[in-house]
Image (cartoon, rainbow, N blue to C red; front, side, top):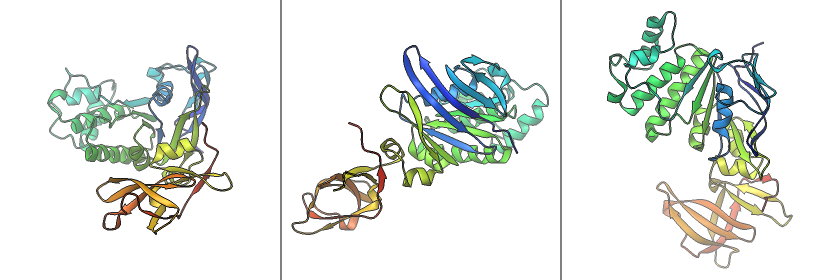
Length: 325
């Protein structure tokens, strides 16, 4: 039996009269990276900051490694005593300190050994005496990761840490983070609005979405493939990838991914191509049907012409609750 590195229990938060988070429940296992996926303004950074101690939630409780750090709107454990490491979007390195000094900042004992260990693990050999301003973006982010890991935290919080990195480098650093999280048995929480990042790096995805004035809730939590293929709500489907919503004769709403449908041209067919977009490896076509417009991926060597009629065949559809106006 183990204590969860992080456990949210009915966590809610208000900024004045504005309800931002409502009844958030989520726990992490050691060595697990969970991504919180949500649109801008959904409260995902606020949720992360409640764990760090930068924001005190107005309701619910938070446990770190079995220890209550917040409950009933009251901070029980100060941020500096929570054994939490944090990576930021803008790297947040000290510009007047060397790489080694940045990594060792805050270490009390065995600092030199831990710095050498992390320099080797993260491929920073030879850069120890360099200043942050002379490093590339990827190198700076590795230094930021090393500094967050140096005190051997039980929990690593990642606040859109790869947003300023180029595509290939984002996933390279992301995979490095995942490897270390698993190796050192740290719980990690990544907040992002990038669905590829959320689905591609995490063991589980937690989708945070707001509905009206009730504050954001976790609409679905599960393995990336489960959340993508079987979304429980329209918000989950939209946040995790390209999707269309259709209504059938029984007035049941379904979500359909572009790769889950095909269009077959046929004169007089009930479906019609109303838009085409070249995507590189394929074309994305918009097909108008009696149940609504559907996005379909079409191969480049067999893309139907604009205005073509035909039949839409849906291979996979997921029934979801009725769409709200």
